Amino acid sequence: MKTSKMRRLCLTAGLAGLLAGRALALAPESYPNPGQPLKLVVPFPAGGTTDILARMIAQKLEEAWGQPILVENKPGAGGTVGNAFVVKSPPDGHTLLIGISSLVQQPWLMDKLSYDPLKDLLPVAMIARSTNRLVVPLASPAKDLRQFIAMVKAGPDKYSFGSYGVGTLSHLQGALLNMQAGIDLVHVPFQGGGPLVTNLIGGQVASAFVDIGNALPHLKSLRPLAVVGAERAPGLPEVPTFAESGYHSLDRYGWFGVFLPAATPGPVVRKLADEIDRIVHMPELTARFEGMGLQAGVGKPEEFQNTVRADAALYGRIIRDANIRLTP
Image: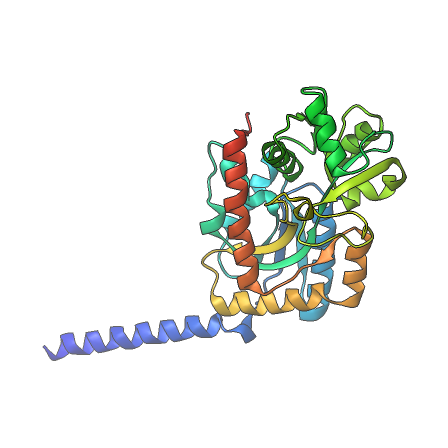
C-alpha cells in the first residue's frame, strides 16, 4: 500500500515537473529557440508580391532576433502545397506561412483539400492589404460606373471581364458585380496580372478588376471606374467606391498575412504578432509597401482573425451563388 502511494506521488511529481518544463519552454522569453531557425513558407514561386513581402519580413525579423530566418518557396496547386506543409509542421512557432486571401477561398473551389484553413491555421498578423479597382481601356465609351453598367445591359453577351484566373479575387469580384448589377459580363481568365493587363489595354477584354501593383505602370492606358474597399484609394480621390454607387460586399480588401499551425501556444503567437506588427509599421517598410501599391496591415491578431472568418463566409457565398469551381 505504501509502495503504491509512493509510486502515485512520484508519478504526480514527475508529471508536474514535465508540465512545468513545457510551460517554461513555451514562455515568450524562450521563443524563438536560438538553435532553431525560423522558416517562412511562401506557397508561391519566388519573385511575386508574396515572396517579396516575405523576404522583407524575414530580414527585419533576423535583425531583431539575431538568428537565421529562412524563406522557403513551396509552390504548387494554387498555394495549397505550401499551406498544407505548414499545417503539418510542429506547432512551435518556428514554421510560418505567408498566406493571402485565396487561402479562405480554396475550400469552396476545390473538391478535396487536406486541411481546413479556418481550423488548422491561426491568423497571427496582417502584413499588408491591397485594393482592386474596376478598370476599362482608355478607348472605352464608358466614363464612369453608371455608364459602364448601362453599356453592358444594352449589349448582352457583348462585353467581358478579365481576371487573374478562375477562382481568384478578381474573378469573384467580377462575378459579384454581375449578380448585383444584373449584367452578364463574360469571364475571361488569364494566367496572372501581366497577360490580363496587356489584353485589357489591347481591347481583347472590356474590363477587369486589377490591383494597383499591376495597373501602376499602365495608368495612362486605363480608366478606373470604381474602387473596391471601404474608402477611396490613395492617389485616386476622384474615383468612387462601389459602396458609394450602391453596391454592397465590394468593400473587402485583399490581404497578405502570417499564419501558424492552430495548436501553437498563445504566448508564442502573441510575441510573434507583436514583432510583426512593429515591423510592418516601420517607416521604411510602410514606404516600400506604398511603392508596391499596398497599405501596411491594420489591427491586432483578433481583428485579423475576424477579417479572415468574415472573408471566408463572403467568398463562400459568392462562389456558391456564381457556381464557380476549379476543375483538375
